[in-house]
Length: 141
Image (tube, rainbow, N blue to C red; front, side, top):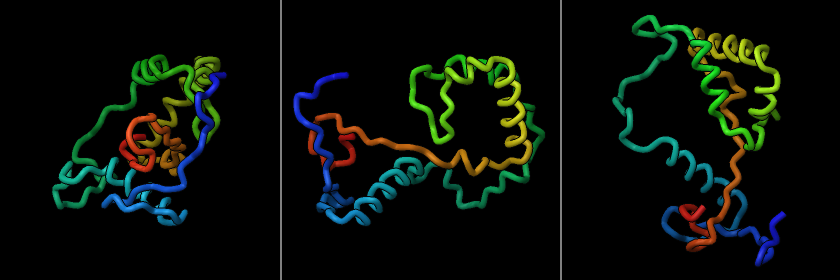
């Protein structure tokens, strides 16, 4: 365990979009939601103005290949924290063929149904301050 030079003191203030400090938990949470929404949905990208219906493909698409799944599992980071499900890459690798076949089946079902499972929408985000700039500015995390 690394000994910190300074004790950890999480900030209770976050700057709003115009630089104004936000102190209330609800406002801080809302600012984080806004920040990540903007980060993941940049303006002008794929914004055609037309509705997109993934349940109606324009053409036949190939199945998920076993080689794709094997490559993705092999190249996944091995020492990262588990997600909501508690499953790490090392656990998948330890199960070998059983997990590979299960993943192929699960990915293929999602591909054919053209629907992302609800469990895949969740994420655990831990903002880490880089010790550069103001701690309240979200761009320094």
